[in-house]
Length: 332
Image (cartoon, rainbow, N blue to C red; front, top):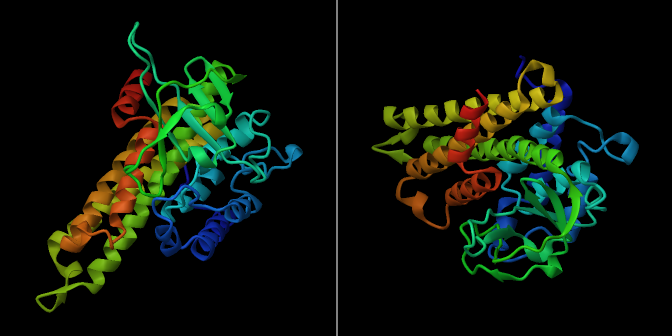
């Protein structure tokens, strides 16, 4: 399997990176920390015009018609840029449940998603956490037996004052409405599978972003008259970050290709493995990046913590690491 990007894929990645750098610089995102509308309607439409939400929508339906491999390249760049908003759910909805999320591909509505928490006997409903609720046009509830579309206005929720990620506004929901069925168990399975791969791509972007940040700081920060990057301990930490990021990237690309070409392997197993390795890499690299920055790494001014917090949020969204590990073990 060739993990080198083709010329078209490299150009696609560069185009998305340029869009994010010019339209959604980190300074602008940080200025909106704690708010609800972190990506305004104009910016969301610009992402739609760039094809972010219609990558896998068939050309016959007005989409671009690309596969999972090309989509993972785009989502890695979105993760590297720390782009907020329900990007992943909006993209998945555009081709998995287009009837439930009309307007997702062209940026007219934001689509969110939440897993329906399990109930335990006669005990009270387990609370759910919904991201970006006030900005959503449709909420997709993902259950074991299918998908349901819910009007966000029908959701009785409480805003969490200090969420883990200041760029991901969060609401607590004690009871999710049943909603309108829009897909059966097979579509729910595909949703979870594709979410693990593309969520893994976002996490790979985070791992790569923290690696770039750590290396840049190690080159410029001096101690004892030398850049700290010349010290063996710091070199080893940065090398560990590189290995983690590249291993996760290979796993995500392999899973994406396996979905595009199921004959090469088991897509379910590949997706679970990709999500697992990407989660571990993003969290590990976020921690090491903070360590490389020393005391400054623990301050709010240095954005290293934003990558770590987003990694933890995404890790839970695609499935806890322990759950993904158990799924990989079951599928072998």
